[in-house]
Image (cartoon, chains in turn green, red):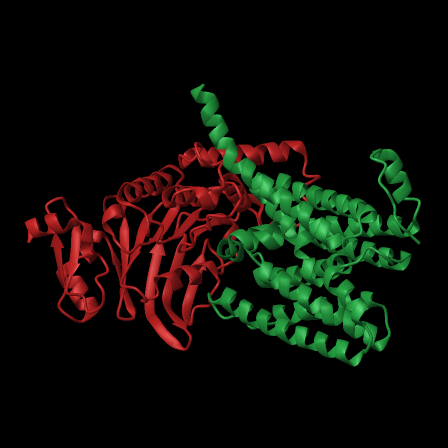
Length: 294
Length: 285
C-alpha cells in the first residue's frame, strides 16, 4: 500500500526511487507508458482523419463495458476491449452512402454513444453499492493495475502498432486524399474499418488509465499539440508519442505525492503543452519579424 | 505492374459504343472515343451530364453499362499506376497540418504497404529527387514545404498536379482543375498542363466547365449533352450548328473580339461561358 502521506523530497532521483519501491506504482508506470505510446500514434491518425467524435463515443462505450463486466463478475479489462471493439465494428459496418459519409458516420456514432451510456447507467443501477467504482470508471485510477493487466495492455498495443506499421502509409494516403488513393488501388473502405478497430483498442486501453471521460487527454491532446508544432508527418508522429509519455509520467509522479486524481494531472499537463504550443506558433513569426526589424 | 507494358503508338484510351449508368439512370450512351499519346482533350458539357462519370469509368472505379473500354491496352483500372488523377476538388482543410511535399510524395509511395525502412538509401534518394523535380516542374518549390491547408487554391492545385505527375504517368485525368481558381491562376495552370502534355508526351483528358482558358492549347473537345457526345476539334464542335444538333434545340455560339467562345440559349445552364467577359461579349454581339 502507498504511504499515508508521501512527501516529495525535490530530489528527482530519490523521489523516483521512492515511487518505484511500490509495486503498484511500477505497474502504473508500465501501463501508462504502453497506453501513452499507443494513443500517441493512433490519436495522431484520429486527429488527422477528423474522427475525434468517434473516439469520444468509443470512450463513452468503454464505461458500460467496464460496468457490465463488473456486474457479471469478470475483469473490467474484457469489458473495455469487448465493448469498444464491438462498437467500432458497428460504426465501421455502416453502409457507405456516396459523399455524405461523414454526416452519416456522425449520426450512427451518436446513436451508439447514447445507447451505450444508457446501458452503463442501467448496469450501475443493477449493481447496487458500486458508487466508488463509478468515479474510477469515469475519471480513472492509478491504483490496482495488475501484472496480468499490464501484459494484456502490452499484447494489444504491440498487435495494434504492428498492424499500423503495415497499413500506415496507405492509411495516411486514404486519410488525406481518399479519391486519389482509391484510384490507385488503396482499399480505403477496408482501411477505414481496420482503423476504427485500432481506435477502439486504443480507447479501451486509455480508458483503463484515465477513465472514460478523460480519454482525450491521451488520445487528442498529444497529437493535436504535435500537429501544431510541426507539419512533417514522421516528426509529428514521434512528437505525439513523446508528449503522451511525458505527460503520463509527470501525471503519475505528481498524483503520487498529491491527494488529487491522476486524470486531472495528466489532462492539465497535456492542456498546458497544447496552449504553449499554440502560443509558440503564434509568437514565432512575430519574434522573427522583430528580429529582422532590429 | 511494369512500365514496359506500354502504350502502343495507337490510342491510349479507347471507348467503343460505351454507355454510363448511375443509380439506374442512363447518363449517356453510344459514346466512341480514341485518345492518342500526347493529345490534349477537353470534356465539355452542362452540369450533371456525366463528365466525371466518364473519368471514373476510365479509372475503373465505375463499370461501363455497355460497350468496351480500353486504357493503355488493358481493362480500366489495370494500369492505374500509369494514370495520374486529379479529382474534382476537394480543397484541403485549413487545419490540415501536412506539408505540400508530403502530399506529392504520397502520389509516389502512398499505396506502398509496410514501414518506410529497408528500401535502401539509394532508392529513397532517387524518390526524394523525383518529388523535388516534379515540384520544380509545376513551379511550386517556393511553398511546397508549407502546410498544404494554408496554401491558396492555385498553389494547392499545382501541388496536386505534381502529385498526379510524380509517377510519370502516360495519361492525366483532370476533373475541373480550373474550377474555383481566379483568372490569372486559371491561365497559369492551363499553360502548365499544356506544357506538360507536350514536353512529357502525356495524354491529357480535362473536364472543364469553361473552355476558354484552355481553348488555344486543345487538340480536341468532347462535348456531352442530351445523353450523347460529339468529338472533334474545337472549331468543328463548338459551333451553332453542331451544338444545336446535339441539344436538339437552337443554340448559338458567339465569338468575342478576343477569340473567346460564348454559348447562349442552351436549354440548361450555359456550359461554355465566360460571364467575366460581358464587355467583350457585348462588343462582339
